[in-house]
Length: 210
Image 1 (cartoon, helix red, strand yellow):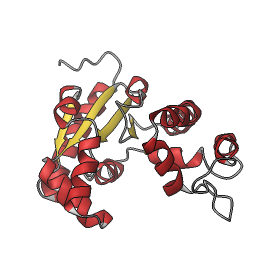
Image 2 (cartoon, rainbow, N blue to C red):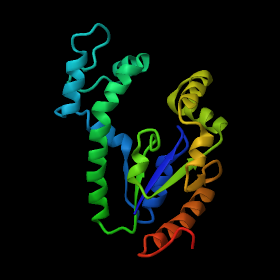
Image 3 (cartoon, one colour):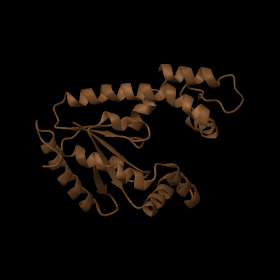
């Protein structure tokens, strides 16, 4: 069984994943895989470099051959067509690589595994999972955490939060929700409860309604 874990920026997805990991549950992070598919030597990076090498603007490759993420963000966020092109190049490769990682984790024998993805719904990766777990915090907490963590001002933090899937829509699409606005002890208690639930669901013939 695969559990998709998602949430808005600074909701604590990795913190939750580590809490499950302490209970023997392995996980893969879609952000890590997204970086893998544009590493030097990967076909996606070659396509990106070829597309933008003859255009005016910031260089999309660093001197060491790695992707200049800041420059690429400037290009794709300024032009929706370019963003769609980039997604057409990277998303299928990310999905294929995620399948490979998840299969390896499942082969380890854990009762279930986690796919942690900030864009679980937006990217269509929710189609790869059996249940969707949303990590939720109030938007005011997201904004404060983002500003502190990323060193941006409140206006920028608000803009980042506003650009994501609305909180209400994420919650409406969740099978389960963890409230990560409290203490670590409260979070651990919620994870422990869900771990027991998911272990039961992973048994043959188990029903979510039981």
